[in-house]
Length: 314
Image (cartoon, rainbow, N blue to C red; front, side):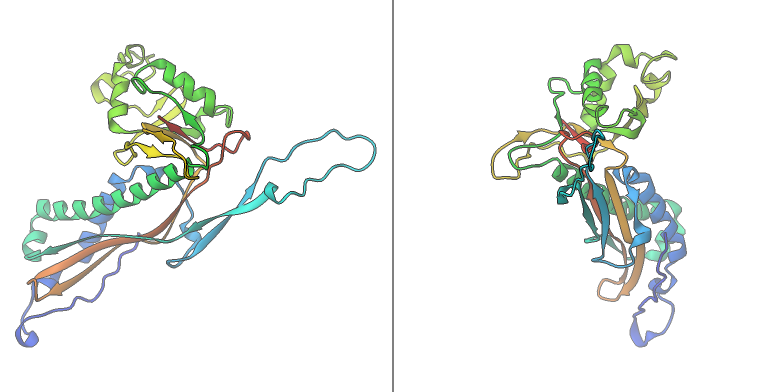
């Protein structure tokens, strides 16, 4: 990530003397904010990064889309050609999101001289931007599961979601039809649903052969179950949502989703940028971190094998 070390606007009577804003150490704060963003991002880690294809806000990346083409038996005469426009097309990723986090620090020199205080401000800036990025990805995921007449690719794990081994069976039954390698899928759960894993005694008891790993009862962390990658994110939508985009009603309460490695794409025209300016009206230094990016969630109804890339857990 690159950071702009912009000239700082100084203030004060007659412009004389050294002011706090002039001594703002962008080269110190920039990496701290970058680290905070990397620590906070969860859903962005599931995305294929296409940033190399963009250079400015408002740009669009065109991704080819090829539907499954039917194979035929060769007999006498000419073969059959599929020419329907539905067999090939494109999807677009628009770089149209600009998120920022800003704060005014009255005594920037004092803050910079105290590592703990500086880390606090840097983390809050970084976490806020990262949270906005992951929230945008979650929104794209939820929107990809909406369709006219009702939601698509829905897996029912109601009751005590992810509180029984049978839920993994249900997930595998739906997802492995689309791609038979569970390593290509990631189960993303809301925190409260992730906590239900603790109730699956056969999986959680900390033996070397337990599905959640030998140290699960000590760490509470699991990265893979039955070949599926596992993630927990506080940005997963958990509010009742209408998945009917055609004007009807299909209300479901999401518990998480299962995402294929080819489903999500992200592109930054500007990664985390840090800018500062001394403001005499506030007698402090304005500090802002921002990012410009776009997100695309590629998904379709799982009626065609290979097209279902995202499944809703509800």
